[in-house]
Length: 202
Image (cartoon, rainbow, N blue to C red; front, side):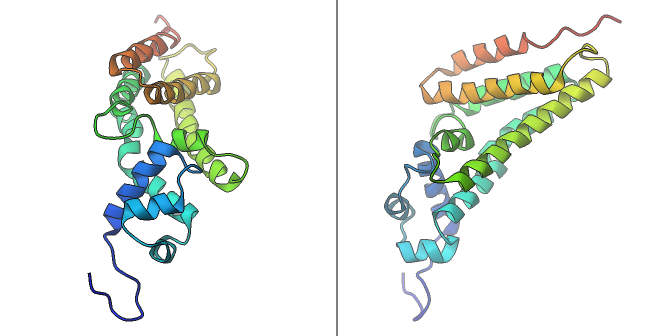
């Protein structure tokens, strides 16, 4: 493709982001090199730096894009029902399908990238931790609201229950990375749902 003198070579930003997303999703943040990224994205390093600032800037944009697309399945499923049991049932089973969907890397990009992020990249690790904590806050809020509506016992600890389901979600992602089948993840989802406290008798 011809370029105008003095301007960087143009490229398809969406396609480049998709290529970068796949690499970060498959290998994590630290194990994905600039050389691998530029090769997959079909650009040279100067174009990457001009468009995204640096590797971290590229990763942040990838995570934002992922969160608005593949990563949005969690919130969409939770929003599909007001009552807590069908909402969390929908969420866990939707994640079981998403984490093992054909044609894309397994598990969750945010969880995978965090697992491979060491002490040399504390800002990236903290950014990913905040994203996971946001889900934890959503879970806590849903359980607290369910208590107020009488769907859960009055002595339920919403924060502890949220922590349990966050651990289930992260564990399902890792099991998917370890090549667990979709059926196994659905079975894990059912077992986790059985841990919800029984609805109080009226």
